[in-house]
Image: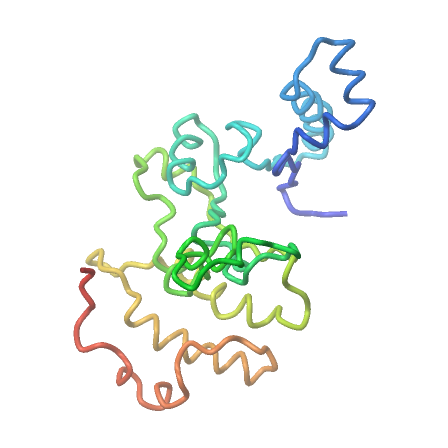
Amino acid sequence: MFPEPFFHGGADEVTPGCWKADPSIQSFLSQQNGTLSQILETFINKTLPIITSHNKTAVYWEDVILAPDTWNNGPNNTKLLTAAGYRVIVSSWEFYYLDCGHGDFLGNDSQYDRPPTSSDVDSNGGSWCGPYKTWQKVYNYDITHGLSEVEKGRVLGAEVALWSEQADGAVLDARVWPRAAAMAEAMWSGNRDEKGIKRYAEATDRLNEWRYRMVGRGIMAEPIQPLWCLRNPGMCNTVKPFVAQ
């Protein structure tokens, strides 16, 4: 059904607790004296030949190579995987998860019931992957940071992700755009100029114009600047870059 050369084989967030509660898994573990890692290995060994038999390159979440639930280490995991010889498509939650920063979908959540002076939830708004990933954060992420030239050659590209626990068609356009456009420019053209300087200043005017073009075409993209800034290019930029204190 899918003509693309890549096929995703899964293995994201394998939950051992669910496996342990399954009678067939319990039987397998007792009869084979096996481990949960061996069960995942069995799945991969059965499905990988099916994928490759159709001349596809299999894509897996990094859990297959690294320990489960280690996908929150950004460039560190990219380094581990490329150093081991694997090709990588980067989708780090710290930079590329577009659903983050909207609280959590679980009800009856007591973490929000804190004194006004509590900062436990303030930093992420109760979202496990908060705060919200701004277009600037998306744009400025260097996906090959800390890699050797050989390792950089193993990074195929990147993708943003919008998980749907708190997103549907009503908010789709605004959650995706223009942040996905910011990532696209960074991937296609790079986020640095010929001198190696980050281009986020000039990208602001470019993406702002692109956002209004999308709106004109019926795509309800989120605004990144007031309309006045579009009509007066550069006038909404800082005179000089902010310096972190």
